[in-house]
Length: 346
Ligand code: SAH
Ligand code: SF4
Figure 1 (cartoon, rainbow, N blue to C red):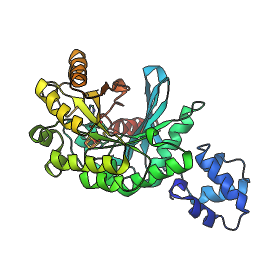
Figure 2 (cartoon, rainbow, N blue to C red; figure 1 turned 120 degrees about the horizontal axis):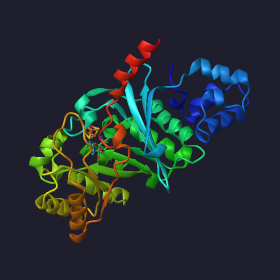
Figure 3 (cartoon, rainbow, N blue to C red; figure 1 turned 135 degrees about the horizontal axis):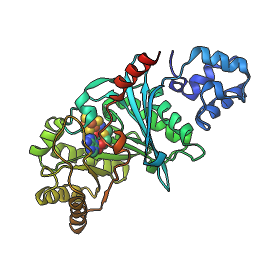
């Protein structure tokens, strides 16, 4: 059975065309404003809830939950209808509440330092499967209001283009989220960046750069062999010209690989030309990549160096590292352990 979040407003209206018109609005508000599941929409009669519950099923089943940062960071492993698993992370900050969603189960891009890439690709997620992650997090965040959605979980959002664009559009239209609060992170699928620029969607784009010379980037990010840095730069230029919005580059600092002075100058030149903001992420450990992240002192130096070269740079914190919930650590591996445990306890 599909998720009810596969439906757009017009789909819901035609499904409920035998009901009074105001019911459509009631169901829609329950789903989108209040993030309720069908059974929780008590503004409509029970018979209608039952009818919807017979046609639609929640897409996500919690297989496992872990928390860290004194409860401020929560990660869920969800099992999907076909047994595929994904991860979603909720992060409470003083000024915002952010959910990091997965766009695919696994990822086919094979970046060497990323746990998702190491685990390989299972399948694309559907619109409903991505939106349900947001709604689940919105319920868990209460009484605080979920303010930001970042597509930085498992998968490459621009490899699942139609779903990503549709989810962004719906979150903007139906939950009134602004471009500043919706971020899509891409490894650099150049033609998809250009296409996305033309959609007129409200979103912020982050490009995972990690290296600003092709030799190093070919090694870290295999997709660079297909869309090398010059090709990526022209896609970024199209983004800037078409949307008028700045973009940011993500750079996971890896000791001796991309944290040298030379790497800093290469990055400053590449980012400076595009007026991009740089987000530095100290590399988080993953089982399949043995090179270390840069030491914190080097991270600060690198940031200051970029600033002195005229590039805005911030350091992203490593929320959730201890529960494998930080950037690049999502692999839904806990699932194997969880299913063994639950089998035993049955
Ligand atoms: N596929 C998209 C979005 C998911 S990855 C992308 O690659 O952009 C989200 C971010 O985590 C990306 O910037 C990615 O490069 C980064 N990342 C991956 N592995 C990491 C690791 N081990 N440590 C720190 N950041 C990592
Ligand atoms: Fe995929 Fe992004 Fe991980 Fe690369 S960094 S393997 S694109 S999820």
